[in-house]
Amino acid sequence: MKIPKPTDPEDESAWRAFLRACERHHESLRGRVPEHALALLKLKGVDDGLLVEADYNRAERTLKVVLRCGHLQMGYYDLVLQFHDAELSPRNRRVLRLIADTTQSCGVYEFDLYRFELDLASDGAMILRMEFCGFNFPDMWVEIRCRTFEWHTEPRPNRELPNISRYRER
Image (cartoon, rainbow, N blue to C red):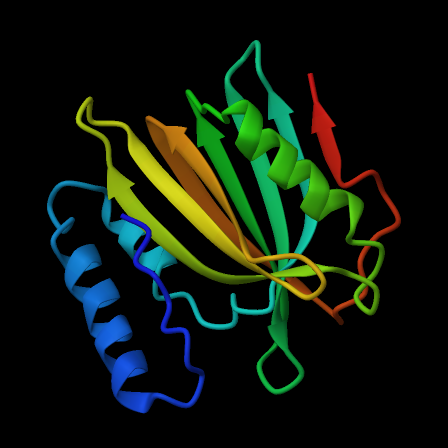
């Protein structure tokens, strides 16, 4: 659905309306998507999440995305998302690669996660969208179509990112 954010950061009523619209949309999916998918939308600390890695296997149609989330007060964790029967369009692969290529460390990056959106396609596939805020780039969306996905968190001692290739595609 891509519910647009308000353009004026100071307009509190527009932000409240935006948050209500997001909640209404996601509540409309209750009973039609797995509860764990809806629980992801309420996970604390995902805003400002950094891409640790994305591994897309086109032949097996799997995608693994790891985001470093949290903050000093709540602690840090990796959010590990595993998608099955996954599709990434060429545009979404380019965007994910750009985010990966511009994320060098917890102090040197161009994009951080802002939010998730969830939808259902007419064929029953789930669509998970991740909106990333850009600093020197416009905000970007990554849209993942899949039949199923699961997620879990793994505690981390800090926000430091491993020095690895952030995007792999096979």
